Length: 135
Image 1 (tube, one colour):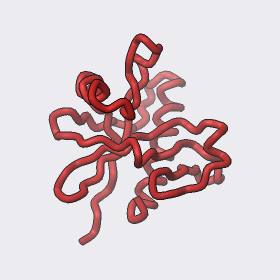
Image 2 (cartoon, rainbow, N blue to C red):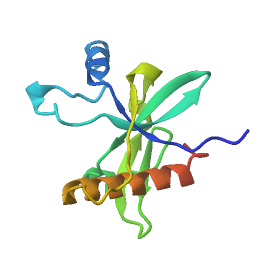
Image 3 (cartoon, one colour):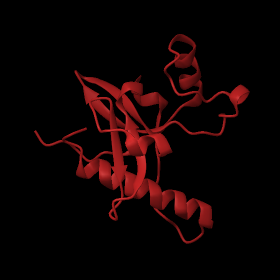
């Protein structure tokens, strides 16, 4: 059976906060540590009939020396520049009502920041779809 195309989703912030109360491995969206504007963005996969969101993270200097492994994968653009990572060890169970698909189409009225962010998301999603069998 061929897997369908992956999409990017924001996860409901209240759901993330509730999960983080019982699991301290959940990426924080807490205003106390200045993370309230960080979206929880990821791709959704299905394992054993349950949906899980694998979070995307911005690349950090430490990621350059890390190797891809069962719980971590680097995302590269077409010029082989590191543009993000997937943290499989931080994936969370999700339900349809906490998912909101991200519209990554670039519109002429988008400001320059939004255009740049959507272009990055497009590159990350292209990589994910090109590598979805490994994911």
